[in-house]
Length: 589
Ligand SMILES: Cc1cc2nc3c(=O)[nH]c(=O)nc-3n(C[C@H](O)[C@H](O)[C@H](O)COP(=O)(O)OP(=O)(O)OC[C@H]3O[C@@H](n4cnc5c(N)ncnc54)[C@H](O)[C@@H]3O)c2cc1C
Image (cartoon, rainbow, N blue to C red; front, side, top):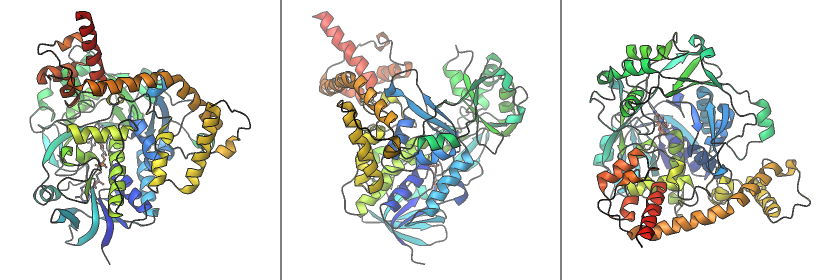
C-alpha cells in the first residue's frame, strides 16, 4: 500500500476531526491516524457543546464549513440559549449531547468523507529534515510521508491519570497514553513542552437519583440548532428533549471535601501542574471560596440509551471512597450509585508562543498544532483550532496564503491571537469578556461574518453559498425598508424570513452601541502608552475580579499596553482600567 499523503492528521478528537474533514474537503489526499478508532470525537468530560462564547465558536466553525454544529444538532438531547435574559450580543447556544451518538455521527462523517483515510495506530515520531516535516513514523515501524502534518494529540502525550493517591498511565480512563511522541517534539522539532492537568466528575446511575429534591431544567420551547444548514422546523419535529436538574452542595459536602484536601490528587503534589482556573475541581472551589456554603451541581443526562448521569460542578481528584461520601451528602443524591469515578489527568502540551497565527510551528515548516496540545481546554476551543490548523495545512501545501482570522471578526480569531501572543500559564478557555468587539461578533451573525471565507477556501459549496447570498440580499432589502415581494420560507430555506427579520432587528438595535464599541477599542489601542501610577490601588476597581486584581498587583504594569499583555487580563479589564484612569485625570484637572 502506498503511504503518501498531502496531509496527515495525528488524532481524531474534536480538533483532529475538524482538521481531517477540512483537508479532505479541500480536495487533498488526507490520512487521520488515531490511537483508537472506537473513540473518535469522544467526549471524556461533559457531553455538552457550546455555552458562553463557546456556542459562538461552534456557529463560526459551521459558517466556514466545519462539522461540529451539524453533528451537535443530531446528537443533542437538550438545547438552550444561555444568557437569553440579556442582550443578543451574549446569547450563547448550548446543547447537552448523547455522547455515544455524537461519537458515532462524527465517526461516520469521517468514514464517508472522500479523500480521507483513517488508520488506528500510534504516531511515535515526526520525520523532520532541514527544519521541514516530511511525514510521521508509527508504532509498527512504518513511515508515512506527507507534505504537511497536523498534531491534535489532546490529553494523550505522556498522559497520567490520578484517582486520589493512585496514578497510572492513560490518555483518558481506559485508553493508553501516547508515550513516544513528546520526545520527538522536543528533540526533532525543538518544541518546549509543559504539563497541564484537568479533572472530570463522577458519573452516577439515573435510577438511584431522587429528582423530587431537585429543580428541573428543561430545554428551550423553541430550540435553535447550531448549524446554519439545519432545516429548523423539520429538525424541531424530530427532536426529543430530555431534562437536566439542579441541586447544590452543602456544608456537609464541604466538610467531607475540606477535611480531606490532602488526599486529593489536586493537592498532594503528584499533580503539580496547572488546571483550568475556570473549570475548577470541587476541592479548589472549597479552598478558594471558604465563605461559600453551597455550589450549583447540574445533574445532566449523558444519552438516550444510558442511565449515566454527569454531575456538572463536581470535578474531583478525590479518592473513590470519598467521592461516594461527597455525592451522597447532596440533596437528591443520598442513595446515588456511582458508575464511573471522577479523576484528574496530567499531560504534555506545547507552549503556543511557538506557533504562528496560522498554527504552523515556528521551528518546523509544514507542521501545524491544534487543540488541547496548544494548552487550551474544551471541545469547542479544540475544534476551532483543529479547523484552522487543517485549513492552513491544506492552504500551505496548495501554495496559498494562510487563513488568519481577526479579533474583530471572530472568537476563533481572538483565541488564536491570545494564545500565540500572550502564551499561557494555565489552560485557556474562551469567554465573551475576552472579546473587545463582542457586540459585533454574535452567534446570530456568524454566517454574515464568515461564510464568504468558508466559500473562498472551498468548504462551503457553491449551492449552499448561493442560498446564503440570496438570504443576505433579502436581509439587506428588509434593512433598507424594501419589504415588498419577500420570498417564502421555502425559497429562503435553510434560512427563513423570521431569521432575517430578527437579524435586522438586532442589527438596528446595536448600531449605535457598535459605533461606541469600535471607538472604545480604537481608543484602547491609542491608549497603550498611558502610564499607570506605580502605587495604583487596583482594589478601587470594584468591577475587576479578584483574580484580575491579583495579577495586576503581582505584575505592577507601568502602562496600559503592558497591562493588556498580561496573561488572563481581558480587554474588558483594560477598558475598566482605562476609563478609571481617564476619570481620575479629569478630576485632577
Ligand atoms: C479527564 C478529562 C477532563 C476534562 N475536563 C474538561 C473540562 O473540565 N472542561 C473542558 O472544557 N474540557 C475538559 N476536558 C478536555 C476536553 O476533553 C478536551 O478539551 C478536548 O477533547 C480536546 O480535544 P482535542 O481534539 O484537542 O484532543 P482529544 O479529544 O483529547 O483527542 C486527542 C486524539 O489524539 C489521539 N492521539 C494522541 N496522541 C496520538 C498519537 N501519538 N498517535 C495517534 N493518535 C494520537 C487520541 O487517540 C485522540 O483521538 C477534559 C478531558 C479529560 C480527558
